[in-house]
Length: 439
Image (cartoon, rainbow, N blue to C red; front, top):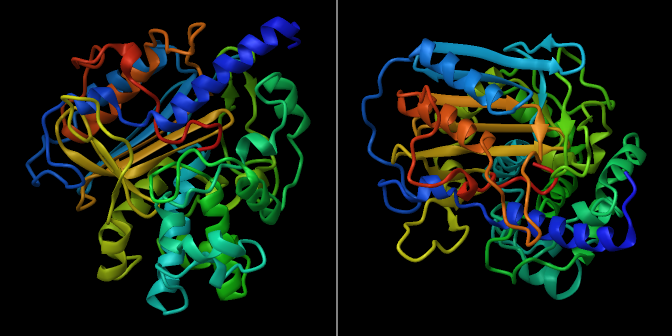
């Protein structure tokens, strides 16, 4: 799509504002207005109704009816499980989705990378509070190498910028052309790290600011201390240890198993949305390249939270959180970030642990109760469907409330059959933490 010079400047400004909003506006308004536990804690364990399969089916279908191309969801309560799919895997042919489709999970990869780093902490090879320069002196020298710690990388308080926009020059002006031209481009993690280290930070060191560069650096630290390719190490010591059968770092641009198309709209600048399910994911690496299924994600977080992947001290460190954003006046804090995992309060008032992810065309969200008993994981196939006005403010959006309705209902045991019931208007519901443009 070609834009005139005037429209290009206006569009760039609006999209830049929108991306900033999506990257930093991470407190879900509909969660913030709900009564619940104090910040950074999980509400007391309570009895939740058994899975209502009919309501789960209805709320997932409502997500498709609201405008999402296709989605698949897995919900678990103890030994009881439900899996479903809705919509189409290919809008052109009408090919249906399947509940066991493989899916690009974006920044949920960060949970796996953090587990691998914490395993090395347990072995005494990595010190969370050691400076990054101890492990990567050539890549992160000087004052930053001395002041930024491994813990700061994992909880996004490093003050390091994000590499994504520099890695895709021109994406704000002509996203379709830029994404197409880079579809088969391979990028080494050291190059991504250098781009991020040269990028302006969103906030000063010590304050939370999401940056994928942090997890590329974490992967390079893993490589330095283990002597192994970090993706191979994570595969052997995290994915296989968790017993996952359909989770992997892709070795080619194609997804191995059955999957849907993954469609990128880029806020309407790619019209119609294009399928980017085939893509060289070296640009995301240990920050966001993995493929999984919703069922595998439930297994992973259940075993992680149940202490099967990390010992008690390392798991406590992972769940030690920092504030992500200051709440608006009169609102309570609703979301905090740990080491590759966050906790947030949903409209039910309960706190949950997990992460979300987004890459070009693919979104994913996985949440669980603290004991891992009640869980939901959902994948969906149309990204940056949101629209903004000339000032970069979000316009009314029916898709995001439908997403929250399904996820909140699946966790609370009371799935909404007719949309999200919340005091927050639809246009006030910001997307999740990972919407710039990797997740």
